[in-house]
Length: 386
Ligand SMILES: [Zn+2]
Image 1 (cartoon, protein in one colour):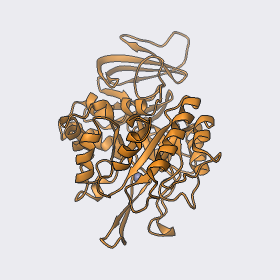
Image 2 (image 1 turned 135 degrees about the vertical axis):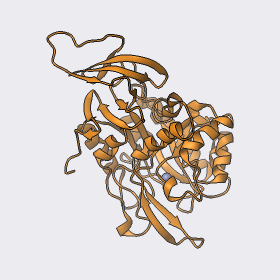
Image 3 (image 1 turned 90 degrees about the horizontal axis):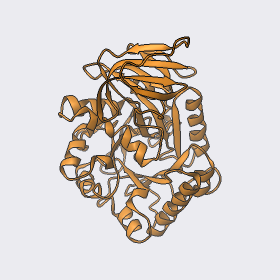
Image 4 (image 1 turned 180 degrees about the horizontal axis):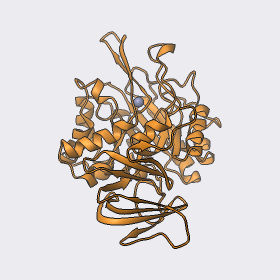
């Protein structure tokens, strides 16, 4: 019930400096100097010994119930393991369906989110899939978002991709308007998560939807913005108006095409994209297919949630970004984009999702909803059947 973190060098994500954090019943009760557990209450004390303490990461694009399948039935990816989340310092995920909206269901993504919550981490989902019309639980995007607690938006809807349903401008507007109203009714972001493919001028459908409606760019959350040079060049302009989400897991497999996420953060900022517009997600448990020029599958890998922190760490250690800047893309920024009001920041009243790092920026302890799930670099909690 009570947890006290002593002597952490807090990045909230803004750099606060040496401080203590008191946690009660899953919520951060106080942040300050010389805090102690009240006498008579049991509780755990973790001494951070001056090491960096950051908010738990939010990974806002994970195929939590499995994905893939583009290489046939044997290429379907498995469900995300809880331990893979915790090892990556991820305490909140947003699950999505992906390419296969035909044989997989939104219901299974929702149930996986409920399973993760029951195991002590935080989880939301997008209704829908790559396809248009999007598969839903209640029959309508807006109804799913308004009525189902875990549904914060719709997606990932594929645009500019050979696997897209190629929605018309009006179809995309209708989906986004419905998501917006569902979000208003449910008190959610009601956001449209967009899978950007390899086609030329990939942001064009979003520009057309915004210019052809009353929608704002903030309604769209395009991901894979670092998947190749021309998408990334467009993202430098797009990001001045809308959100730009970088995908972390795929770079090591496609270094010949992709912009390394850790470097992309700085390059976007240098191009004038506000830091608050930049997010990073793993695309965890998504398959990473590579196709030849004829569209034949030639390679298949799977992403992991730990890739987000890997890239944040390398942005600091290799690319010289300040830690508070780098972690914002995986903490405060996605919390604001998705309106996860209790997440992404270490401050009184927020959920106690906290990661303690070593001086070398390795994850040593993870606290999810006030509970220690990793300590001394070792997992305390794993998922069922792990
Ligand atoms: Zn995608």
